[in-house]
Image 1 (cartoon, rainbow, N blue to C red):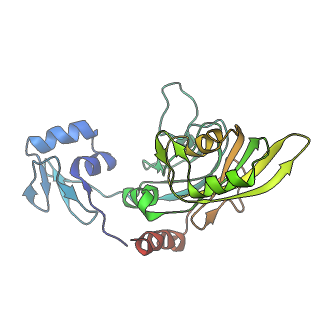
Image 2: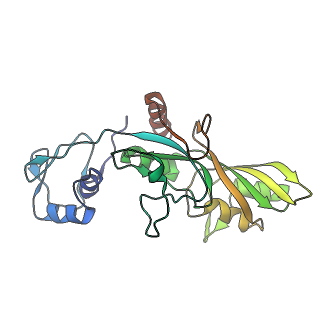
Image 3: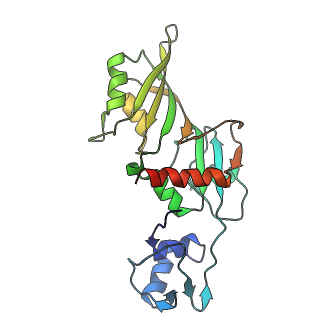
Length: 244
């Protein structure tokens, strides 16, 4: 697997020792050792192989966990919610602190990965790795061929053009005046898919993410989850290596 580097204070927080801000204080006070040497620089980066010690205690590395969730609509993609709404974390019972890889909107359903592997998370969400994210959208109106081409080549949202993807009209319901479109993108900008359709004049009525890379929702019902197999994790890492 690839060796990723992360800021020391982030690693300390991710391992559950304290908050990131408290970790920064400990580093600045010289209380943190990396491989036996004091580190008091906030920008210092470490890998998963480095030994971190605080006040004489070696930080234990969490066992890595990887989950694939069929996220229902009406669930928040977050670790917590100040409005006390149910989050995706509530759907997966585990003693480890896991995090969603990217996000799906409150009213969007579909595939979502969750893990405590920060290296893999960063690799999967970085646009340069061009990991396929496949969405199926039900939109108002008939999506014209010229707009299918625009969705594929990129449209301007929030002042910036989206990267090249693929779009395909799967179905048009003349009676309901709605289109079903499959869209493959490689970014994860805020409300990206909805904005791409809406800027072309097609309000999104329903949205589902059906695939991430080679992973799909086979065998799962809405709200269900499963662990990724070691082979699947290895393939995901290979996908990232292949694209670098």
